Image (tube, rainbow, N blue to C red; front, side, top):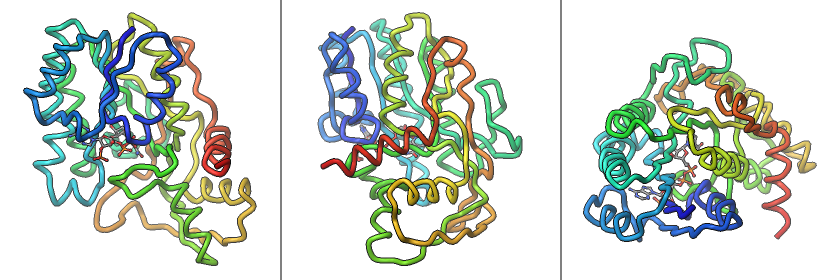
Length: 288
Ligand SMILES: NC(=O)c1ccc[n+]([C@@H]2O[C@H](COP(=O)([O-])OP(=O)(O)OC[C@H]3O[C@@H](n4cnc5c(N)ncnc54)[C@H](OP(=O)(O)O)[C@@H]3O)[C@@H](O)[C@H]2O)c1
């Protein structure tokens, strides 16, 4: 099983390269500079030259405020470029795997969302990712779109996002005594390592296609997640609960966007709990 991995320096890309490397097939991993999915000709040249069995696309334009100010770029990377990937993969019999987000939902359900729930994004980022889902399946019904939530991974986190939630709390705990963390947003924070392992398990099932949710099991507020983090790392910083009513920097976020892995579970793919994912990530980033 030969794989082309797009976005190898991202949180998920780093973990996918690791997860795929023990699997026997060849992994052709590209960073943003080496393969930009908005450069269609180059992308097609690479894919038709390598002719892998699978393409895993981890790329995204996903800083919420930048999606609002640069909607053309958000739609280009998160949606329009997927047409080219979907068509090229379809025409060359390559399985396409790409990622979407819990932000396709509005949070009104108040319970974890399954793959069968109806999306209703509240901001440009979610809209562009939902458009990407539709484009993928419209041009290549055999694609896999994996929706995930609150991803953290790698030593440095996401370059675009300037890290991740865990690294931010650890960094702030070095020079602050108190930090404010929101209580109102309920999420399923997900360790990129677990997401990568289960992505690989999913693509190994030849028949997998359509939308899958893959998040660490369970859900919590960002406040509860931060409390667990400081307990596990024995930090002395105080976490102050605040309620931003889902609006931060003028951008609406779903109040309840936890996901449930209904399809993956029914196919025997089990994600560990969010507490377990966090424990292993803390061990990984503090062991060096
Ligand atoms: N992070 C989260 O909390 C979260 C939540 C839900 C869903 N997701 C989805 O999960 C996936 C992986 O997220 P992540 O946290 O691993 O993101 P990440 O750490 O920011 O990694 C994304 C990678 O894609 C690269 N990239 C960006 N634009 C590209 C383009 N046009 N062509 C090729 N590569 C490009 C980035 O390179 P540069 O850094 O150089 O731009 C980066 O290496 C994304 O689809 C994201 O939407 C993430």
